[in-house]
Image 1 (cartoon, rainbow, N blue to C red):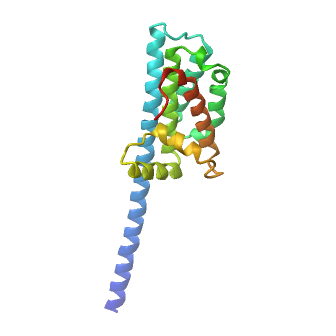
Image 2: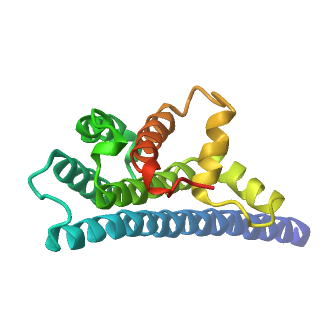
Image 3: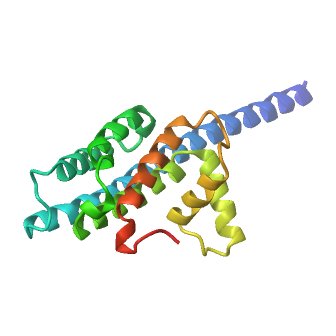
Length: 191
């Protein structure tokens, strides 16, 4: 009888530890997602703050399509950093007016903002896709931390379609490449 009590007690301890471990894992995932959301916001906030600084110095016209599109894009992502796949169509719409322009038509200030936004999009692609996060971690270890988000995204784009499930990442990458193209004449292309 005492053996049965010991077995039941041991099993209950195991079950309790499994439940506690699961709850701890959920907390860890929640904290990670909160961190990633704030981290993502910070990159777009930097780009938007720079754009606002340039607008205050009259280097960017606040009535231009570029300013309105980029401001909308930054605001959209900063308000919804954890649901980028839901607004990937919004990304395409937000840069639609920008795509019509030739990089030579952009001012140096606009090219700088385009580049900063493209960098921020690279963080979204890597931080919100477990496959990309794994590949980026592998690439960082393989290159001994000599690869950054921008050059990793350029590298991945050369590999072709890795997975049909990551349509949102491809749309964001396309938008990112367009922004890099627009900033190309300023010498700020990724490594």
